[in-house]
Length: 619
Image 1 (cartoon, rainbow, N blue to C red):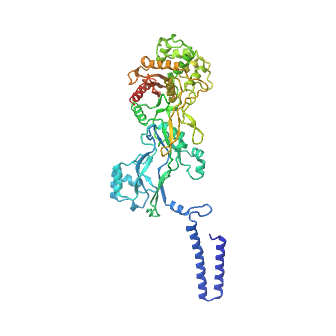
Image 2: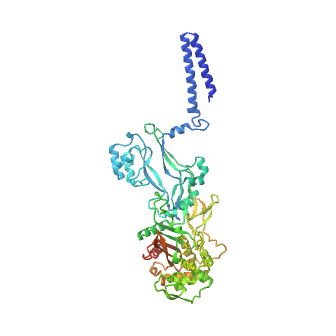
Image 3: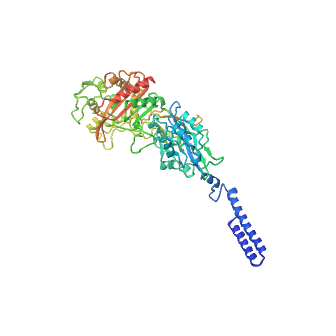
């Protein structure tokens, strides 16, 4: 490279020679010197340009600027076809995310490349739109754009006939390309799967080194809820697949550079997340809930033996492409703790049986009112005289308040813990990537018995706690886990949502095995107590509040619940039903929550429980 000092010396020499020549020689001599001076200057400038354009074009200046790449990039217009994010699949390998489609890309080119009036007319007809809409939306695009029908938030998938028509028209600025839609339209399990969005601060915290190194944009999308968020480091991928289009200043395609596909090549990435969910079962149950009109609530289906979650459905539904953070419709109701009502009587029953505070022949009196604490039974006039078993089947509030008075707050809390209802119940452990904490159920809320400051020795507090009111909070996930624990003999297992992680070539990267919940020194309830509870839960169906389940396809067992709540200043109820089936050899545990229902409404949760169990019987 010619230094600045050398260039100055050369110009100074030319100037000195020229001055002498013009001072005392002939015109011919002066002309010769002038031409020589100009030639020398041109040689210096030419050498400099050659140095910049040829020798140092790819690493110009101390900043190593690639002039060739920069000049091409100025005429490059790109579009992302696939984010490169890992795929979330069901237990059988059926994808929940990343649906391949054929879409239309419109590129910015000069007008004479945009097709004739006849071509546009045929194109508009094939796409089911008007010529006017086409010209307004895509007549003067400045960046490559996906074809979208009016109202579509994502690129519109082409049919085979549409693709054939577009190909036959041979319009230069139209390209049919493969595109990966992250969330298929009408995707099932959307609350458990979650969604991605732009979170620069979260992204910076996770990938500061990659962002500072220019390998990742701070505007990239990251998991914001569900499995997308919980398994973000696994799903991140190694880069997007994109296509770039190149035009000259007149918007004409550059010869030999019109289109270039860029995609990372790796035999191992992106990773695949294999969940415990069953896509077909999930779809059937979600369709059933839609037909039945469940507007707020959740359904969780668990495998009794393994603790795997086979279905996790939440309402209301939401659009992952139009997220309103304040709306909270995207929040997964299956892991949110709410007032449980009488399903909590399962805890009181287990404590009373294990602690021996009730004799199986003892009979209680229910007149409909407890006589203190303002507590009454749901049945007007009461149930009369009945045993504790009968009180469980009939869900008698008065009897359970009397039994709770024989137990302490600490004892009730201890048995709730034995049944997995305190703290978080979902699978948790260390990530194989970096050893950090990993929780499968993002956003899971812990169960609660007593709020901070609640007087635990107060008789009214114990009476309200006994019927699942006051401060008691449970999630549908915890409720299903409790039913599963009773069904399997008392052992509590962490509900599991992901079975393994696979490399792109199908090899296994990590396996997440089922595990028994650590009860901090507490033994689970005994098999004898669990067997008694199973008999009582069967009695709920044969002669109690679940009598409408007697004609189900399977013999069922369970417990109903109706919790008094206030929503938006209005008195409402949470309807519950939890249980398992078939009753003689439990395979599936199910919890159903109908949230914020009218106090006068029929018990939809029991009806939904039966419908879900009938689907499982066919399954």
